[in-house]
Structure formats: structure tokens, C-alpha cells
Amino acid sequence: MKNDISKLTKEQILAFIMGVQECTERGDQIDTRKELNWIVTEIPSGWSIKYQWIKAVTRFQLINPITDKDDIYHYDDNYILILNAESKRKLCAEICDAIDYVNSNEFNEN
Image (cartoon, rainbow, N blue to C red; front, top):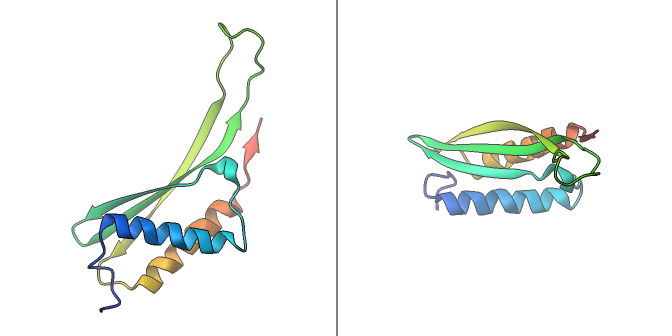
């Protein structure tokens, strides 16, 4: 079997990402408040992988349920572009870099 990712489906790419995330979290946990989410989209020559997370939340004190505001969540996102001819090792490295980037940003709660 070739080492490139051209034969993988969207579901297999997503499963690969989740596997890398699980392995990464054995050594460095992702803050669960960030709710990291992956969105895989097929493009003509490869895959576009969007990763999105909550970077901050503005909390409002609940006094009156009718007039009070809900908490406001502030999101951030970024993309990975991976070509079909690239290797699974390259995809794994890109995912690890993305997780490191998410982990390097502090979660802010006001």
C-alpha cells in the first residue's frame, strides 16, 4: 500500500485525526473548555482540515432569567491543507502542530 493519503476517505481522515489527538493527549491534555473541533473537507487535490476551538468566554451573572444575557463564547479557527500525494507522517505532523498551537493559547474567562 502506498504511504500517501490519496486512498483515504473523509471518515478515515477524521478517524486518523482523532487517533493522533488521542495519542497526543496521553502526554499533553487539551483543555476541555476549548472544545476542539475538526472539520474535514475534500478539495480537488487533497483535503482542507479546519480546526476550531473556544478561546474565551464572557460570563454574565444570572439574576433574572428573563432579562439576563447568555454567556458569550469567542471562537478561533485555523486550517491545514494537505495534498493527496503527501504522506500520513506529514498529516500526523500537521495535526500535532495544530494541537500544539491550540494548547499554546490560553483560555480566557471573564
